[in-house]
Length: 367
Image (cartoon, rainbow, N blue to C red; front, top):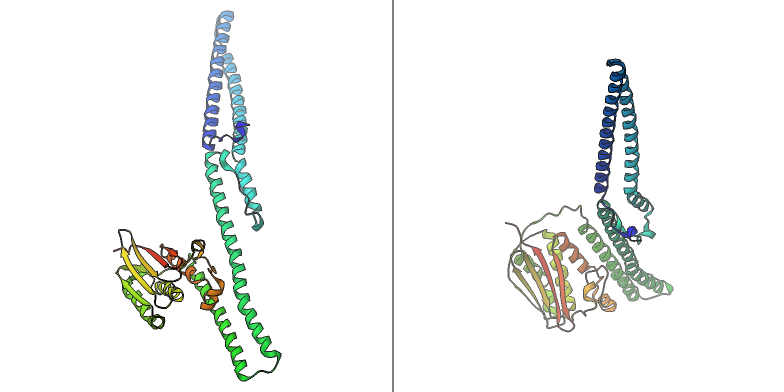
């Protein structure tokens, strides 16, 4: 039982041992053959000399020819046996590879959970088996994410479509005043704008997550870029009496359009959930390796159980609250995608009633 689970020698080791043993065996056979032939020939020559008193060269050649033929036959048989043995060893060593090929041939969406167990495989195939399992892990994770994404998308689109259908059915069920028809059309327009926002954000996510996308970066003045976006939202902040501030500066290697979208998303999100009279503070810091941009607000905060999920698509902490603000749960997912495209990271720190801090970490700009 132990041998079934023990680590098999590597294929290289098996073939090295096989060829070494084969070579030693053949050399031993040839050596013994020549030694035996030499002794026999000497005995025959000595016997002929004693019996006839002379040495026959023709007789010597005939004996030598017979041994040469026997040697050739022995070598041919030895080579054939070595080839057969090598084939059996190679086939046994490659058995796991054949099994892996068979499994890969039958992999489908319903069997992504299957795994192989390469712990007892030869060293060369052990790494291949581990890599194959890791590939299945990634495919299974992506497939589950895609399935979940499809379900979430269907749910997000079903609600506004049902709302539009409901408004239209009510409007067509009986006669209404112009004001009532106008109200129904405004409600439908609001839902259509919501659908349009979902589609626009999904298309943007698809572009940012495309690994073939050629990201054009330039050196940006982070303070200047963030200040321009703060100026754009100044009217909304003043309406809610929210104080905005910005300290620090750094130069970034980033795509200017994506950087603006990035800051726009986190700032608009902070403005939505920061109550009147609150504050929002940007800070920019650098160290030996990274540039860090943080946004700290005095908003309502996010509970600990929701915090690990806020960067997922369509994830919303409170569906009713986010519907009132017009959120579709894609803003922070876009932030995460943009940061990954720039080889950076985004993290969130939050506490209920005390606000949220979003930290963007960019690799340091190269001189």
